Every structure is written in structure tokens, then in C-alpha cells.
Length: 328
Image (tube, rainbow, N blue to C red; front, side, top):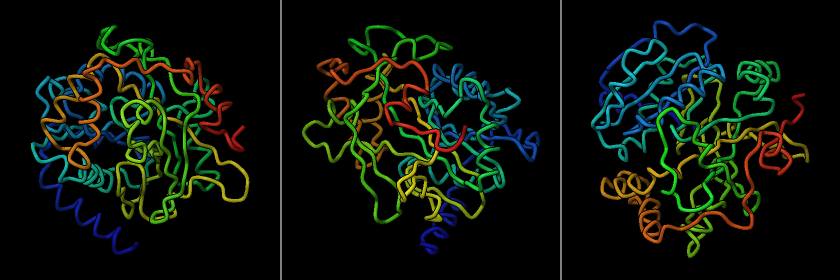
């Protein structure tokens, strides 16, 4: 595993040559700042609320990689003082689906910082997030000598056709997509990295009903007290060193955890799926997006008997999809 981790770090250094600086405000980063790192492509419509949400949680600085957007994403982000931005025309797939680029940025700028790695359609929630900023969580994690914090990805969706209600820039996407599966999840352990492997929700039951074992993984470790020796190996599903994946108890208790509300299923989804099939830049020859594009031709209603309307983090905890552990 040590050799594998070092190879990941070397790979990230090599892939850093594919990044062109658009705006570097990293000199404004203070030693205790909380950072957010993300790779984006054609996400301008999502970014106003995304930035608003994470600034509200207490994120101090954003590091974005723009993978050759054509919708004005770069122009929108340029000029914002808490944003640093890099551009690349290189292959997303050959950069381990953006992981190599982000590993490089974290190695260079995030050492010693609590760092979130999320997509523009993911919204991080955690115990007491309605009353406590993210710094309260990271302070508790520091005091508890915990270096990584997990969050289950929970797909949220509308009731009815996905394209029925148009999304507007700056709007909270949960106003359109407030429903989620309250059950229908499976969990197993990945023997290679020791992380949990979670599958289920609307993507498995609708888009991968015939091949449920190929459904996307819902386990993520998006919040880490970063060290330049660390590296993600598969999105934010797994990290090296391997011990960072030990985000669950093995002796009968529960570790604190969060969730990522995944707002993929807006009216923009069908066009996005079609574009990504054409680009062929995602895992397994974009098999996931091919399943989306094929199924969306029938305009499925993702709502089902397991659907529950999202209220707050306490509801997610009661359902067992996240835990406050011993953080009280």
C-alpha cells in the first residue's frame, strides 16, 4: 500500500503539468482555513447556490479545476476572492476522473488544512449542521484525534418527471428534489482498502435494476485533515494511507458521520447524461451515463414506496444513514 500511495503522489505531480492557472488566490489562505476542492465542467448554473451553501457552512477558500467548460463557468468564478481556479483541456478519464489533479492541488495547498472534496451537485450535512458551523465539527475531530470523516451519498429527486420543474441559477435544488430513499441500501467491506462499500437508492433500483452489482457506490470520505503524504485513489471512496478509511466502528459502537445530499436529478440531467456519453470520460467507458441516457428516454418517475421527504439531518440520523456518535 505504501508503494501504491507513492505512485499516486508521483502521478499527481506528473498530471499537474496539465493544469493552467487562471486565478491563484492561495496567498489569502490562512493556516487554520477550511478548504474545498472540486473539479467542474459546465456547472455555471449550479455554482451560485453551491458557493452560497458552503460559504454559509464556513468554508474559507475554494480550489476549482475547470475541465474545459463551455458555458461560462470560468468567467463566473474568475474575480471571486475566495476562489482559486485552474483550467485544463486534458482527459478527465486519464486523470483518474479528476482525482490526480485534485491530489496535486491538495498536496501543494491543503497540507494541514481540513479539506472537503465534493462535486457541484453534492451538499454536505453533518450532526448539528443547522446550528453549528463546519469549524465546530473540525475542532471536535481535532480534539478527538480523528483525521477523516465519512458521508453517505444520498440521491435526492423530485416526485414526477425530472424535467417537469426547471432549475434556476441560485436556487436551492432541494426545493425541486426533496425526496430520497429511506431504505433499500446494502453495505459490505472492501477487502483491499478497508472502506465500506454502500449501494442502493434510486440509481440502483431504476437505472441498474438488471445489474444491481454495477450500481454506483454511495460511500464517501469527503472531509480529511489533509497531509501531503495522503492521496485519494478512487473518487472520495477510498484513501491512502489505508487507515484513513477506518471511518466506522468495529466493536459495536458508532462513529460520527455525515451525508452528502446528491442533487443530480434536476431538469439539466438528461442533457448532461447525453453529453457525458458522447465525451466517454467516465469510469468503465461511461457505463453509468449510458444507463442514465437509456433509461431517461422513458422519463421515469424516481419516486417509490421508500421515498421520504427530506427535513433535516436529525431525520437522516433516525433512519440510520448518518450518526452523531459521541459528539453531543
